[in-house]
Length: 383
Image (tube, rainbow, N blue to C red; front, top):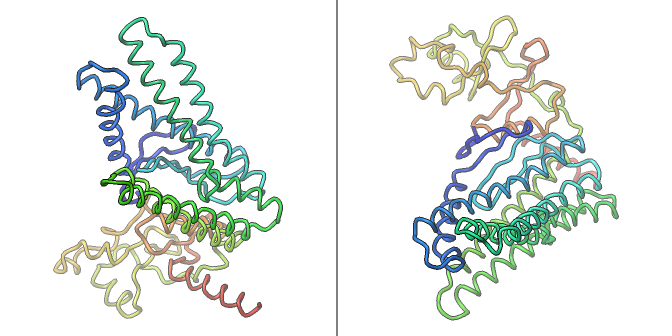
């Protein structure tokens, strides 16, 4: 499990996960709605009522964000792309699509469907609010205020996402248009990324100006600056990630992996493993198996968890990672997928196995980075 992320549910074959920061923003939204919005919309009610309405509205807001991201995910699958999961976090959510679209038209559809979904939700909530307004009963007044808030916030969510700054939806729409005109994915990514950074710097400077130069100390300006800082980091990471994915497109694990190292048997003691294999050859991990068939992998971290006076007794099979916890790739898998697995896990290398379960190689973070560096240097020499 990725650090700080936990699974909530699976919808339509897509895992819905949340980062711990989502819980923080849920509480903050609940508090803000209960102390600012609902007392103005519904004066004279108790604090318990305001808190309950705030929690309901905050939860429905994140349901709206989830529906927004599900629209991206389902459109991506409809265009033949694999969707890994959706993660909710402090700034909303993100659908993690395993590869870049092959065509600018696909990118355009995947990007634009999100804001269109938010607009549709805004229209739906607004229509429902009209049905219950003017309310005939107290419950109707509660429902109307929640629905009006959701209509407004979904409309604002659509507008915010259509800002033409990568990696926002509007930035991806911009990239798709530039890509379609220039037929150059990398150039389109750089241009959209430039606009994304300009938008991020705009948020940062506007937030700082609002905080320190508009009279008094406005905390909301710091929040705006924080959003800009987050967008700036997201833009830089997305542009770098898109560049790497473009470089690795069409490259298989077999083209990059190291040849299969010697495997250790699961009955070896940790002392034997260390003195005969890991220390002499400066290895951080060793595949475990017999007769060529992979059974698991043992790492330095696995050994550290065992008291040193037990190393001569505890076997490799007692501490190795195996079964469903063992991540492997095949020689035919794309390098992009392997890099995603490495970035998600708390491990530095992946065993490469064939369809018979036999170990044929190892793929490590360091080896991939060296391969990328060599490829980049060779490209520079060609130019």
